[in-house]
Image 1 (cartoon, helix red, strand yellow):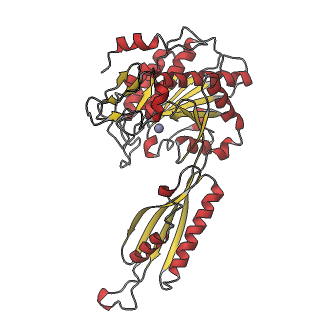
Image 2 (cartoon, protein in one colour; image 1 turned 135 degrees about the vertical axis):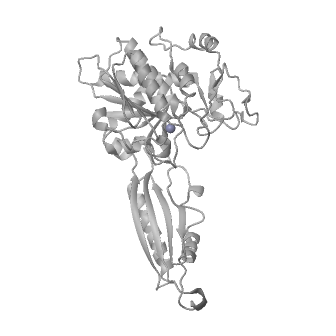
Image 3 (tube, rainbow, N blue to C red; image 1 turned 90 degrees about the vertical axis):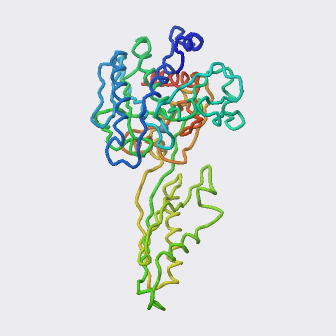
Length: 433
Ligand SMILES: [Zn+2]
């Protein structure tokens, strides 16, 4: 455990927004408490939320929002927290939402997290005390080079830290505190949304956007300070079902066609030097077999198809279908089915129609004194789903690093920059209205 008194004296006196010199940030203080609440989600569970313990944090957030003075706040039966900070301007300002997820990744334990603050980082290896094989080194995590003199928070070696996404949660809570205590900062209606089960891909399953009533939003679920993500993959699933011809193995000569063997050939036909996750990065997509199941008579292969452009997805699917049809010509008595299901779409398709949403975020990052890093996510986010559900929603940095691992870390200073960026964002929305 951190000795918090000492921590506050040493850090927060120095952490002051230039614009509002009296304001002591509370994001890190909140963060240190939130990470100690176990909120790991469970991909095997069929209940919602997938683990009841996620609601422990949801309830705590409701309580704290009330203490802050946010009257309009509730947690629903699924563990979603909705809150409203009323407008304090006469202008007609769009309603903006800030969103973060309360759950932590199933990849690494989130039970008994013991956060440690390493004040005034000077570039030395950070050895985590509960497992000394866990060492945070600058040459393995070059982002640490930008953190000299900063205060780094890690876990103790046995668990993840949970900065993904309790950093986002704590930063949004601190924004709420800031806005309520600074009525001089003019803003429109600000909505807060905390969701369960993001890490298991169900974060938007039970969200009520009508109740939320926002015009657009920002997830606080990114890494490096100054980064802004407005692009994700577009994603489909493709299922191939191969029907072989079955016969008694003792009398199968010239009759049997084994579906599993055809499946093996189809997989062997996939290109070895391109179009796969293991051979692509940047803006290139892939065709990726994720599961095979079958018997001699019938075999199923599940693929995921990824591309940054939706027409690119279609091209990859056509390519795969043609390859399989070609292979099947060798076995005229066997047959196959090919089914494509839509998974999610690149949020950029929505954001490009509403360019001010990304433009405001860029402006806010620059007003916070950071250099902008535009990034594309080689995956999907709750933001990509929310964007297509009617809430355009790019992803802002929260400061988290080495996520889903025992070496996860974040700096107090990056968290403060995230809060500062959101303050600028709500001010920009008001100014431009
Ligand atoms: Zn996350």
